[in-house]
Each structure stands twice: as structure tokens, then as C-alpha cells.
Length: 225
Image (cartoon, rainbow, N blue to C red; front, side):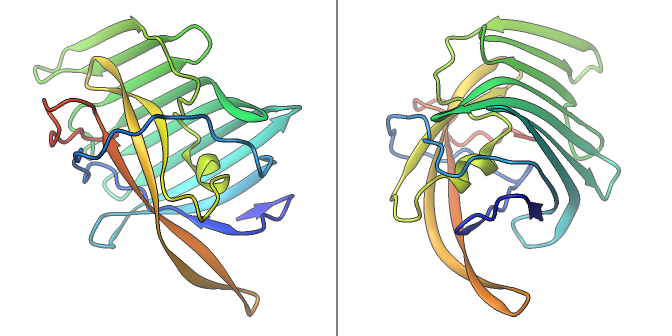
């Protein structure tokens, strides 16, 4: 991955699509993440792995900046032909703030194809999906979005968390298919060594748990989120 500004440390995140289960965790108050490393222009190439380590998709991340506004586009192309494409706009004025996010997931890997749009300014969330009968549905809701909603820029969040922070909690909008807000609880697990042109560096590995709140549906899997 190439970036104009060289970060002082690297962050590695393993994202698991369709394999995750929403686990019960202790509820922690969420807070916006301070901008420590200003996001610049970059073009990264990612690999998405299942929990057993098998590569299931190749990713392409392109990011551009205009003043304090960042636009990122992340595309994962799965081996079975499925596509996950997300375009995110955010600002970085002391803290990160979502402006808009648009996520499209379709193909055999996704039982229910979904098109999710989040307006971080107005709170309008639009979900377009196909139900079990094959009918297309549209759901529009206005949510009271907390300022720490992090749809589409979890990588930026991870890069700006201090490695000695025991726990960080941010919010995310998901479609179930009705839009709802969940909490992402981020905990550093360990530091893994890697090499850049023979020079050893360390990457922080994080464990991200999803708290959907309450007792109902705590272990209900939500595909594609």
C-alpha cells in the first residue's frame, strides 16, 4: 500500500464477511476518534480472508482528499463472482465525521443482496434489498445518528487508535433489513512483525466485536455486515 505520508505504525485488520456472529459484550460508551494521522491519498490492495484463513476476495481501496474532506472507494471481488462496493465521504476536523456512505453487496456470497445509503448529515438511511420471495424492497428511515458513526472508514479509525488503548467503541449503521445502529467494540490483541525492504516493523492486530444491544438477537448472524 502506498501513501504520501508515512504512518508511524502499521495497522492490520482482518475483516470477516458473512462468517461473523454478533456476540454479547459489555456495553461501552462510544466516542469519536481523534485525528492523529491525517488521511491522505492512497491506493491499497487488500485480501479478505475467512475465519479459517482462506482468501475469499481481493480488494482495491482508492482514497483522495480535498481539504479536510476524504473520499474512499473500497471494492471486494469474491472468488464466486460476488461484489462488495462501498464509497464513503468523511471529514477530518479534529475528529472523524461521516458525511455519506453507500454500500452495495450482491452475488452468491450474499443471501440477501443489499444497497445501503447513509446520509451522515441528515440521518436518512435508505435500504434497497431483495427478500426471500425475490421481491425488491425499499426501506427509508431517519435515525438519530451519533457523531461517532464509522460506516466505511474503519481502517482510518484503526490507524488513529493508540496501541495502548485497552478498548475503543464506535457506532455503525447496519441493515437487518430495517436500519439500526450497533456498536463496534475494538480491542487490541497483539503485535505482529512484518518487513519492509528488510526493515522489521510491527502491526497491531485488533479484535472487533459487534454489540447489537439488549438480550434479543445477541447471537443472531447478520450476513454481509
